[in-house]
Image (cartoon, rainbow, N blue to C red; front, side, top):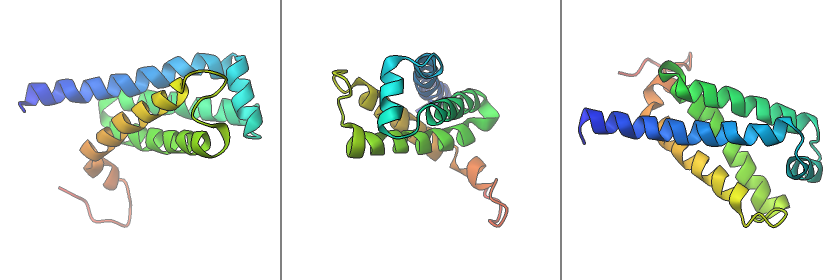
Length: 135
């Protein structure tokens, strides 16, 4: 893979993760019925909905900025792992007849962010104060 191809891949992964997270913010921040239903069922309405939406906004912004992509990817992996966990344990994969779309979107963001986290792992590990710097 050439440097240009690699760069295109990294930007595609960044955009996929960021666009999906940013798109779902509209529903969280406007208290769309499906979002309210989900967070009510989890016992986290309204603060969980607003808090997680805010974290997704931060993760999306950090993923887009090249110097902070690894940190944003780490946050997104954690958020999407939580989303998928709740889909598998309390919500179900299909929520209010959405055909599993929310679960699939969470899985896509998780996967693209996990790949980004792997690519930028050295930058993330260098932020841990008790580890020796990586090269």
